[in-house]
Length: 96
Image (cartoon, rainbow, N blue to C red; front, top):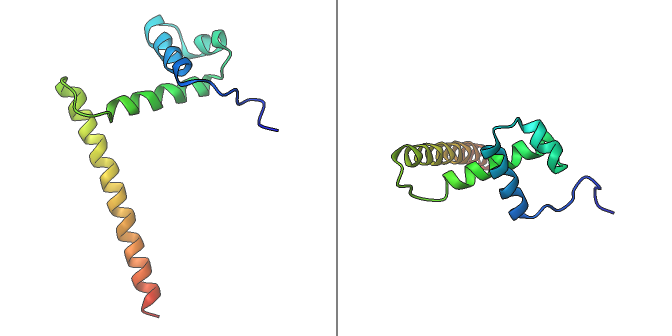
């Protein structure tokens, strides 16, 4: 059996919950309690949807576009650093 805490919320429900949170002006805990979800769950949905929107592509708003490009650069740097480490590790392993 699956985890009883996982209810399989739809993406539409998650988006609507995040919209309600951002427009109501109420604390996360109150909105989460009203919707029957955990506070950390609602916070996670908000963070994930904000990140998805940010990385969705070019934005007309210059600040949003700059934030998206900075986040993309951060991800690319992390990937580059990981590949450098992996290359060094495998070079070391094959030289033995």
